[in-house]
Image (cartoon, one colour):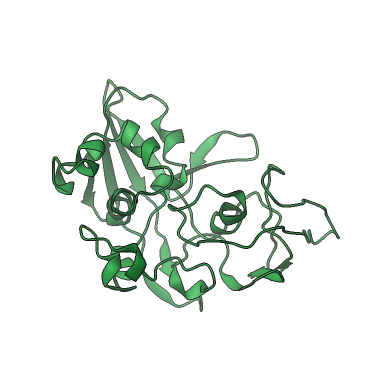
Amino acid sequence: MKKVLCASLAVLLAAGCSSSGSGSAANETKSEDAYYVFTTDVQTLDWQMSNRATDAEITQNCVDALTQTNSYNNYVGALAESWDTNDDKTEWTFHLRDANWVTNTGEVYAPVTADDFVTTLQHLADFNGSNLWIAASFVEGLSDYVDGNISFDKVGVEAVDDKTVKFTLTAPTPFFNTIVANNAFWPINREFLESKGDGCKLGDPDPANCGYGVATDPSSILYNGAYIIDELVSKSSQKLH
């Protein structure tokens, strides 16, 4: 889905653009095409490893979450076309729409599946992602996995089938459909992640030898969102199409 951000098709961004006007961008509109001045370069394209506005302003254009906010600030489906819960809101099941992962050249890599949401929570935990604490507060067993007390298959996330992902929570959470919009839950394709170096292997991480999400390399991530990164030139330009 299109994000509510200033980037338009084939526009050269002179900044990471933010719908909220917050963060480190100068947010000075240069024309109707929304050119902006940016003050710092992107540090990572791995959306789970950063809470910096200048990173998120780019990556949130590149990937869809299960849910997102609309122009009225209501949470609606993005990759999830529907969801349901048990009576006490401790189990949430999301049903995925059809979507594909593509490379930075636009080539279809694989369909988006429920396993991408299992993968993302293990990656978040293994690599100590910036919002790990958020996911660990809600998803049953995630803290125990981080502490080494259980294996990941005991964590409360399950790919029921390719189109259905189920979360089991630590407590009743009637607003969990809003929590999954956070970057802690944005999907990652397992095969692509682990192809980026021996250090990317889930269960045995070595960030120094993992080439996933490199800030200067648009080919180091996959895309399922509105835009694809063309280039990120330090202190010069950020271009998406």
